[in-house]
Image (tube, rainbow, N blue to C red):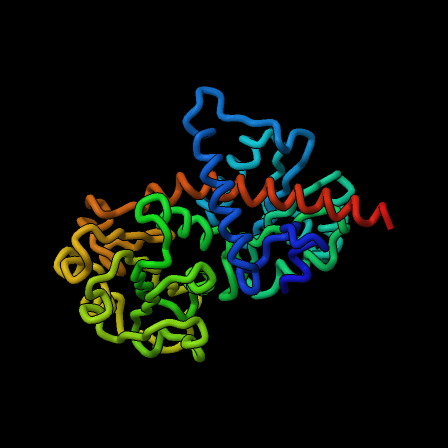
Length: 326
């Protein structure tokens, strides 16, 4: 999908998946987000990069963190923001997705942030919209959540430096997790030395080895001497059939407790994309402990989404100029 995301100069103009994006571009996103972190510490948290632009949040699934951090990111870049409430929008009255998009285009939108339960929805929209509009995937089905993947990479880099020399463990419901897929793609592209996944066999996707990971079914073995632990939410709403006996048994075998954390390095980071299910995938004492950077991830998420918005708009401007020249 790189051809859909990049202009002829290799610059970002949509952000749909991390799959196929070059390492240099991911590094550019991280560097740009680093520069935007300073904006959040100012008394006036605004820069004029997207003044006159309009961002539309088109969320077919609920998400407090993703939606609000995109809103904050856009406003800090001086863009106008429209949030479409799908539950009360015309789509609930029978309007097609394409007609909804055409109406938003007619309102002068420049950026669509799309969250949808169907895998591939953001790619479909990127193909359908006017060519000057940037489409950013805020999470689609089980497929991808690229801004979450990149904010996780920014979180690791801020606390641990380059991921290339690190051991990173991703624990929990990998089968249903778009975050896990984006994290594995990012870690692999950035040259992470040791990527581990830890889960029961029923929660592992087929072909997970393509991401260059080591698979563990025993959490104590999997966490041995790791630098970073990324816990995943148990996604009951996506499960069909008896993939798990109970949440209690899952916590007993795979929950991150203070005792299990001791298997990792003493300064290992604990991460979670949220929302946290305390006592299901992680104990409260760990989630709130000194090694947790879960709230930092939210802060870094604003800077990363600012970086994605600014680079996509810059890439779209270059694409428009390329079309005009021809």
